Image (cartoon, rainbow, N blue to C red; front, side):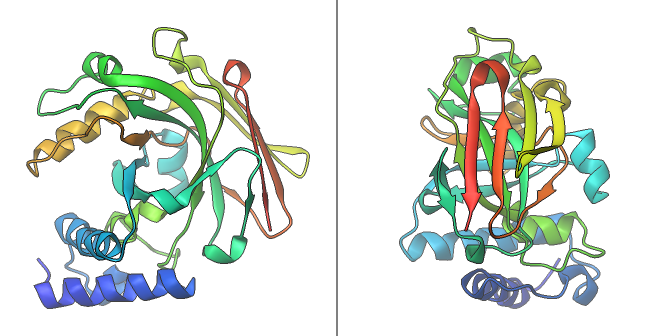
Amino acid sequence: MLHPDDIAAIADELAEADRAHGVIPRITARYPDATVEDSYAIQGVWRDRMIAAGRRLVGRKIGLTSKAMQQATGITEPDYGVMFDDTVYETGSEIPVSLFSNVRIEVELAFVLAKPLEGPDASLESALDAIEYAVPALEVLNSHIELEGRTIVDTIADNAAYGAMVLGDVRKSPDEIDLRWVPGVLSRNGEIEETGVAAGVLGHPATGVAWLANKFHQHGARLEAGEIILAGSFTRPMWVSRGDSVRCDYGPMGVIECRFV
């Protein structure tokens, strides 16, 4: 376990990298004995400082829930981070690329909870019962730690590489549609780059919501009503640059479009 002073110092580094849109050396290169528990502690210190500075937490992101993403990163277990109100965009938005580092896009579904969800025995069924509606989403990845050689410890400490999300305008309750078969056809500047279906996320995209509730229970916490849960990507990440137009077709759940400026 890292010393609390080291945890605080790394959180400071990440906060400065976020402010300056820069990248820091891998934590695991400097602290090879750092654990997953250390990385969540770093994320927690950073999160609390952001809240103290006036940012409002609106939900959680789950990452690395699909084979596509695990193979793309070499990481084999899910992780999670926090999402603040100033990181949520609507479809049609122009998004400043200068706000992020190592900018990539992932295709996901997001869920808004109608009621709290608590472990340790949360299941897919109880997660679906707690969900008010699903909405298509694109996640903007934002990595403040050098990508080469990073491990899950580096990724978690860096708020699970979350930068922002773009939400669609079609909402469906879980009993209106078989969420497993929601498609995603992701295009950049008119060319299709990635395709997938939501079943690629743990067999059902809401499975991650139950996983997160059970994970939170280990820390004496639960998922609360009104929270947005970004459930994980069912495509590989797609790199984007300034000037790129992005479009994702989710079939019966509509289309998301945005442009990076």
